[in-house]
Length: 381
Length: 249
Image 1 (tube, one colour):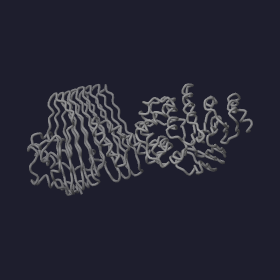
Image 2 (cartoon, chains in turn orange, cyan; image 1 turned 90 degrees about the vertical axis):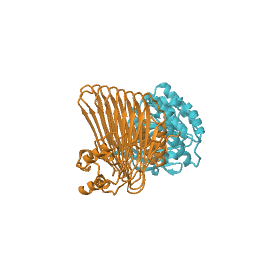
Image 3 (cartoon, chains in turn orange, red; image 1 turned 45 degrees about the vertical axis):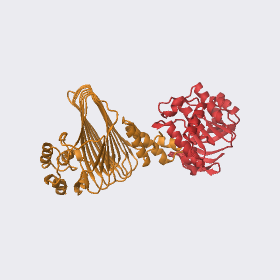
Image 4 (tube, one colour; image 1 turned 120 degrees about the horizontal axis):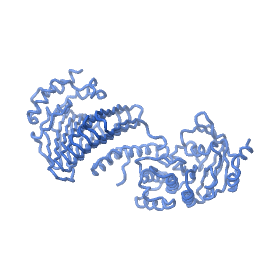
């Protein structure tokens, strides 16, 4: 089994059929490292609850997909970004055909969000988008990455964001995939002094989703916000692995992930918060909450705190349960059906995450999309 | 309006209602009084359809329908309203969205078109004024962070929005100061009509100074043991429940 898993991707790594490559050195480095790495499997801590066989067995064909940005950017080989640590980030570096690089000039405040729509369509299609953002000092910008995976396809994306001193970046990620699509997304954020970055991950649908969000606070006075929701149904699988790395003093982070689990779905939440020895006066809060709508759904949740400083305020918590029966009865006693009452409660529950987005257009879009699918009841605008 | 015959109900192994009989006609206001643990709140819960209670005998006919066969939401749509003793806080659900859904269900059930946003807002304004409820509260999450008095006023406001045929007020006076009590009662009185009945469950007589009942019942050990005119409430206030207990014993 393991041999098969390696060979599917190995075939690509060893062939030259996928030119042009991302700027030479990085791609070559990635290729040579990957040649020695095992394909992720459940014996590895990072992949303990996440099955990769079906992904490994897919007969994926590298394509450029359909990637549109507003405003438009050209794919280039210059803004390659960094290698990354995970297998799939390196796979992206080894085999992507270039990156979309964008630099926000110093002191520039851009109200209009930059938007990417990344489509992976067609059976066996394999797309590897790579987006590298540098937000220079004192700048303000917003980004929307809208992933749309259709058919039996695979998208392995990398987004790297550097937030310089005093810069402010708002990121919304929308994942809206088919019931046969595989998505892996690695988001890496490096933050400077007094910077602010907020990443909201809206996982609407998809057969199999693995998100790695890694935020590193390198400058004092910076803040990282992480939020996400998932409402998997049928056999869907959603995995969020997050890391917040407090490396310096006087930084704050706030993380909230919420799930509503239907049918036979499965989800994983693994949130790590590191507070390094020098990172005194850190304030780090993390919470993962899950509601089980079915006896057959499974959630594996694992909040982890590693604190090496002694003067910090940190909390983490995870809850998993059913809806408050009192609230349900109250709503039904006012004439709402059991189904309608649950929908209203799910709406309230999920809105807390959606509303963490600072992009009103995204908030409305996501609420409407979920409401059209009967998951939530959207507020009348 | 409602006819309760030999109603028996239990929670777990414990039987609480032991053959309760009660008939309320349209337009009437009945008060149910009784000492702690006599089954007052159980009666309210059973009528509203709370699933923690098991009905072990008897029947309840509401507007010609077998009430006990209906789901809680069907009871509500048929025109039964329970003002909760402890209104539930529901973070994240705005009062407005909740009410819109509730009124929408009610109208659908009655074969009426949904209210336009404008008409709905006008109705909210008119009915919230009945209980002097600040317009801002309508936009906040259901009961979240409301004071005790605001919660009870919100219950009566919801009642006024839903225009039930029978409203059951479960110890609506508990936890209210005298001003809040007056406002709540004023809201209830504004809703009194020849077609609408009330079942006012209370521990104390003072609520009945404001909501004057047609009939007063005394509930004790799961049965109605005494029924009388509104003066019975005054007598209970004066003498306490001990003389009733002695009479029954």
